[in-house]
Length: 450
Image (cartoon, rainbow, N blue to C red; front, top):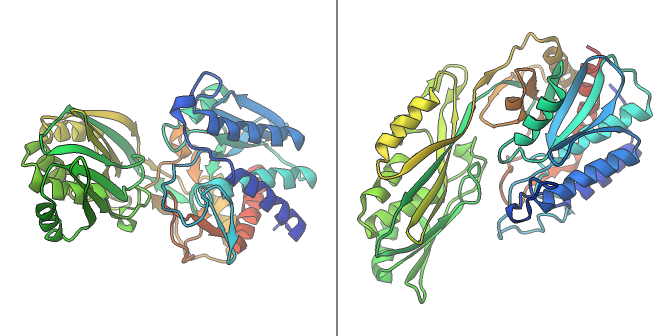
């Protein structure tokens, strides 16, 4: 195990705070050829590039999409791959989401868990290896992508340019390592839709975030709306406004891959709406996406190793005669996504269903010598030999490599810290960051010398 003193850890913290203060959220209105994911993400790209150059690393660029810090002259390469972009934030944080505030031993900010703490740990691992002249058998890279939370085309460009490495890991999951990753698809729903009683329905921030608030404005008596909602066991407020009655329905945000940690406000809002606008499309949407395990569209698949299919309608907008929705599905091996799409289209006959994104399910070869080294590093450091490789419902950059990349960390399976990725008031414990930094150093040295 390599020694990390307080001075080096403080350097890590300073870099992490700087990184967290950059609001690297996709900004479509500022997208252009030089900044393919918008101005704010481009700021993060330039920050990582400038810092790497300042620290004396060779830099490889896929301009605007991804960049890598490089160490070593080996014929073959291994790498870590992390993402700079983060999901959006709502208006209900109790702290500045980009303030990198420290309170009670916790560092708050969007990206603390997903995944700037790990990204900066791989940066500082490269610095440690360089400054301590640690020998490397293979060339080692720390790769930073810019659009993981949306399309992952960023790393697609990078791999197309650079080819496949011998091995890679992305610290965007949990220890001791991922034994596999569910498939992921996104359906886009579109149709013409209007109803005299519905003025507007607005809900959801991103397809991979469980919706925590839905707003609808209806032409109806306030007393009737409240009577309906009160009988449905939903959290809501209803007030009269100039346009009609504004109904706000509240759920709980969570990452789409862990629906048991959240509650979808869109489903509750549709439940209310179906009693106000007696319409088959609204009824079909509610019945189809009533739960998070695909029962509404006969998608309740289970795999003995990979577990259940999970799903959710996480974005829905109805306004000016148009309906638009986004559905997230995480599926185990054995599911035919094309057949599932056809079946959904049969259920939602008046809505156009498009399979917009589809990434296959992956199972990991735990006998791979690189993977054995990653597990050994974790077990030697933590003395935890009971936690087993897990199946992830998340979608990571592992999907963009040809079976040679796995999620490895940074969530500790023994920790009681809640999973706050994509949620308000995201934080990580300062003391755990020490473990992350040490683990990344040891693991990166290990895979570079297999």
